[in-house]
Image: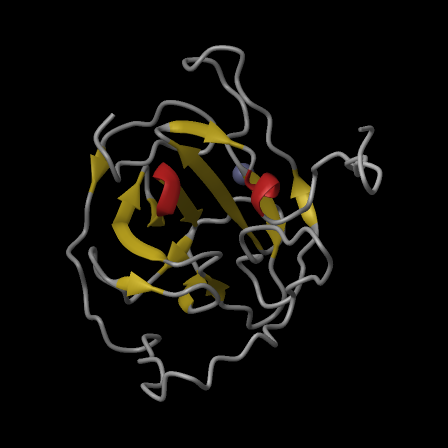
Length: 190
Ligand SMILES: [Zn+2]
């Protein structure tokens, strides 16, 4: 598959049409150049020893209304992401630093894709974004607004994550699912 060309959330999609890059004004905000004034007090970032690598793509931890269901074979139906309930006025936030790899329509729905480190790509729909392909985004930055044909019977966004082209569970990046680790005894056995 060509990089940055997301498939639909439930299976192979029909004809794909990209819209123009659109304007780049609006939600983009330059970060402060002051350098040392970095803040770690981002809302929604849990504390603890094992921080998930990403933050939720919505301002508050959302309800997950439909979970990831990997298809048994790539051509089978499944649910290639998670559905997140959207609160009134919620913007969509980038879950990690990255670069916009796709903005446009897929099967009649506005889709925004962000490429992250590690061969990971987040795709959101239906989400309209003023960002253009190639734009750099930071974790927590506003990247768009939910808009377009509904994906759920209520306000929601579908969030899909691909790792090297294969769909994976987005929740693995925002929740700590590691098993607890038995620490070695002080001094070891020797
Ligand atoms: Zn979905």
